[in-house]
Amino acid sequence: MFAETLYSYLTTFPGLAALIGTRCYPVKLPQEPTLPALTYQRVSDAPEYSHDPGASYRPRMQITCWAGTYAGAEALATQVNLASEAWHAAMGGAAFVENVIDLSDPATGIYQVAVDTVFEGIEP
Image 1 (cartoon, rainbow, N blue to C red):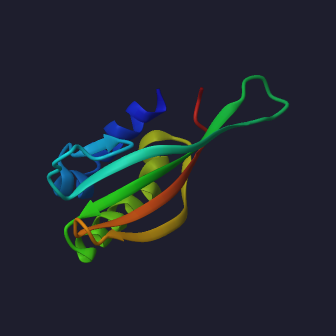
Image 2 (spheres, one colour):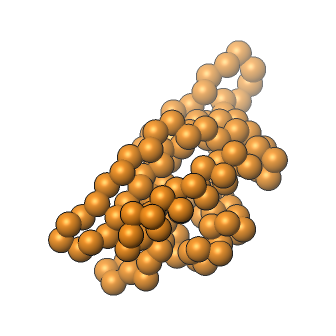
Image 3 (spheres, one colour):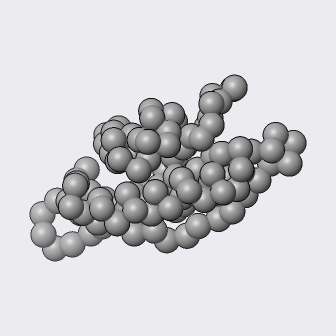
C-alpha cells in the first residue's frame, strides 16, 4: 500500500526524522499531539493510462506540516520539499510538489503548511 511506503520514507528521511521522529499520521493528528508532526492524506489516486500493459498510478498526497510556530511549520515544509526531490533516487518514480498552502488555527495556535505532492510511476 502506497501510504505505508510514504510513511516509511518520510519518517526515515534524515531531515524529517530529526524534526518529527515517527510523528507522522494518516489524515489527522492525535487528540493531544506532540509537535512538530506531519499528517498525510490522499487527495486523488488517478491511474496513468498507456498502451503498455499495466497502468501505474499517480497518487496526489497532501502532506501537512504542523508546528507551534510558523517558522517551525516552514522548516518542516522545506524538508518535505527536499524529501520529494530525493524520492527518485531512493524510491524510483518521481515526486513533484504541486502546491503549498499556509494555514493556521487561531483557537489552538497551531501553524500548518500543506504540501500537495504528486507521485508518478507508482505500481498499483
